[in-house]
Image (cartoon, rainbow, N blue to C red):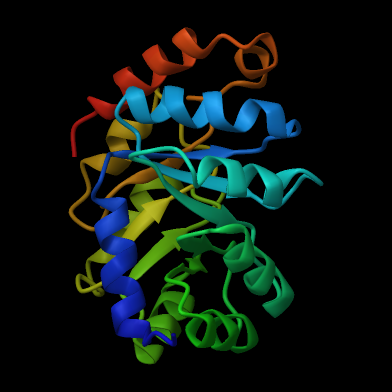
Length: 215
């Protein structure tokens, strides 16, 4: 069922409001999918972004979609084919590093709520003109960090963001304290070392700490 840009942003905002941090996950082994999702959800981070950067990503999404309490999305969506495959795998939302009309047309036709990426005021304005007011600010640190996002928010207060790219425990508060930030995307809650070791308790503890960050 198709979705409008306005409804897509409303749903994306609802998902972003679930917790201050959305884990950005690069998962290589599908066997890690369910225990990883369960640990993150148990720690208070229910919205999960699985990036389509590994051969296992779509299978990972399918497994994580079975975890109670989780809301699993697909990241690094670039083409209409990515959208089709993500929806088929069970993704409930999509995230893109940037935005093209071709990609957004496909997502809207497929009924997939999108969090499209923007790094400049012009990109944000173009998405707003289309009907999107909940965006991803990417790459956050490389694009000027929290000061840049605060500056963009001054003339464009009607747009909200999920900054991603270089967000860490050390700087997350600087983003989350901004009026135009709903949540932030971060990979530190699922470090490769802990995932490969199967240290799900350790990941749950990292998620719990991230879930307590102020917004």
